[in-house]
Length: 253
Image (cartoon, rainbow, N blue to C red; front, side, top):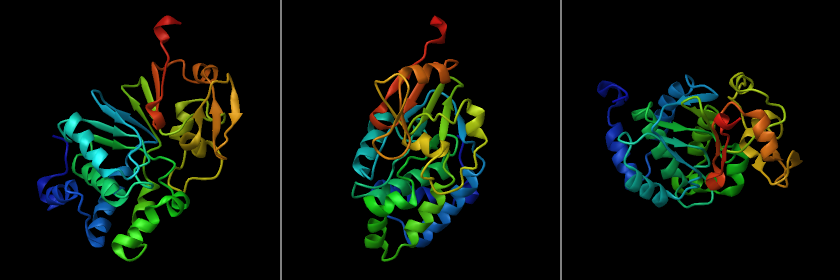
């Protein structure tokens, strides 16, 4: 089982058990946990390779009980491999417990769970949509919010399952021509307002054939022709919101 050695994870199993009951950790426990997670995430690629079989999961948005139900149906980690594609916080009432549990599982079973960055793993967005206020309410200060938003900078941007299924939170960018372009990004930063990193987290598929201006004010809209030209060497493109699939059957080309 790919996990941290028993002599180094200490009471991590107890913390996971506590979090599974939707009970938050202390500020100090969160700080130590995120420091460990940062060491792991620093070693991961912007296009993180993932082995199958794997269960791919979309937005959670602080809905802790939905996450618990997902584990109940799909199997607990590490018995099941998971790929989460961002937006763990905001909107729901349990963003703290949700993201802390996923980070704890990442530290405990680093090869069994992959956690990508979504557009809500951002300092600016979380100050508007709830995570910041939740941290203030549950901890009495913004310290835990700062700890997590600093950690979000290290989350991988995309994943590639068995070199065939490309997974990310948002969509494509006219500035990106190859996966190597993504691999060469410096991702350790706040999500920018524009540019290729922003596009990966904000762009949306659309019925049109080419590129369009996104009505959300960040990223682009893109059609199937764009997708086909960009990623015709892959079998499938998978994005997080709405669990949207585009299949690219290269065997038929």
